[in-house]
Amino acid sequence: MDNKRILTGDRPTGRLHIGHYFGSLRNRVKLQEEYETYILVADVQALTDNFNNPEKVRKNVREVVMDYLSVGINPEKATIYLQSMIPEVAELTVFYSNLVTISRLQRNPTVKTEIAQKKEIFGESVTYGFLGYPVSQAADITAFNASIIPVGEDQLPLIEQCREIVRKFNSIYGETLIEPEAMLSKEKRIKGLDGNEKMGKSLGNAIYLSDTEEEITRKVMSAVTDPNRIKKDDLGNPDICMVAYYHNLFTSKDEYENVCKECRAGERGCVACKKQLAKDIIEYLKPIREKRKFYEERPELVDNILMEGTKKAQIVAKENMKRIKKAMKLDYFEDFHI
Image (cartoon, rainbow, N blue to C red; front, side):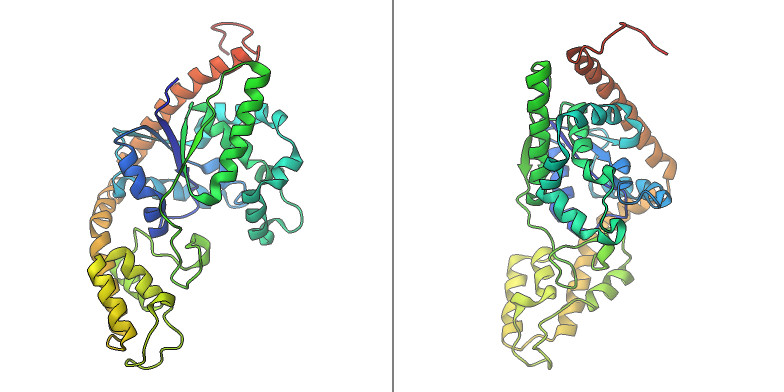
């Protein structure tokens, strides 16, 4: 078994934003140089809370892949594949559902938080599919013998759930599956333009990697600043200003310190500060936007990259499934095909 295989991915529910970039994408570009990397476009998982809007999921598959390619994910080094085209994942999900109780899923902190956030979708009755998505995630991981899973701190309970399922499986069927390790991201979650602790597609507080210069400028000009600062020469507090927060992401350390110094002294107006930030973000994202434009003009190339990655992933998952079914005594007829 390969102990240098990483698995990660995103739900295709919208284009990716700078929160994704600083939180995971930038690190994936580095990791693909050191590890055998598999990146799934999690369309099946996206349907757990978008089951009534499949077109939304479908149209965003290519958008997410283009975002991957634009930031530097190299299809020669990382395998990008479509979750719904790996039937072994669905099969493993069924097998693993016997190894975890409903009460254990209900106690999962990440699941509890996400159910609370989706009251408008589920009301008081969550679906089986959403409650059980950690089981499907365990299937994603083990279908590829992935041993390292890059995650944020809020996702750690999901990895622990997977580890429990793996231990239970191995205790019953013999040492078959790798117990994955979480690779905790060193990056903090990026706040939204409105000061929300989370930058989210559904929150309307995100700057997307594909945003135009005009869109970036408009969004930055709406960012929340120190509410107590009314006039330009009022003394400001950059610690509670989202413009200063983003300067820290997109400018040099010296420039950021200068922004804070001038803000505290009342020497820098918010409008001028926002205009400078917008200019810096536009310049920072320019190579990404240009590369994305290349792929936007070549949709067939994007589709081919996804198809080739999916074909490779299908072969790997199929081979692993043979070994798993053998351990489960489900290998009835060798070389039998329908």
